[in-house]
Amino acid sequence: MVLETVKVMILYIIITFFATVSVDILWSYYIKRVSQGKAFQAGLYAGLVYGNTVLITILYTENHWLCIPVIIGSVLGTYLAVKIDTMNTIDFWEYIDYIMS
Image 1 (cartoon, rainbow, N blue to C red):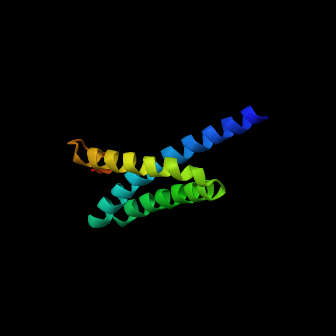
Image 2 (cartoon, helix red, strand yellow):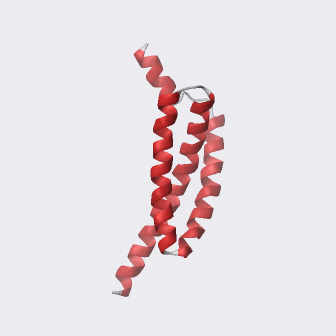
C-alpha cells in the first residue's frame, strides 16, 4: 500500500514538473505570436497554457509539496524558452506558412 502511494506521488511530481516546463515554453510562444499579431496561433498557445496551468493548480493545491517541482520546472522552462527562442531554427508556424504558400 505504501509503495503504491509512493509511486503515485512520484508520478505527480513528474507530471507537475514537465507541465510547468511546458507552460513556460508555451507562454514564450504565446507572447511572440501576440506581438506578431497572429491571433489564431496565440489563441492556441493560450489554450495550452491555461490547460496546463489548471492541471498544475489542481495538483499542488492537493499536495503543497508539489510546489517544489513547480519552482524547479519554472526555472528550467524559462531557461529552455530563452534558449529555444535564440536558436536560429525555423519554428513550427513558419514551417507551416512555408508549406502553405
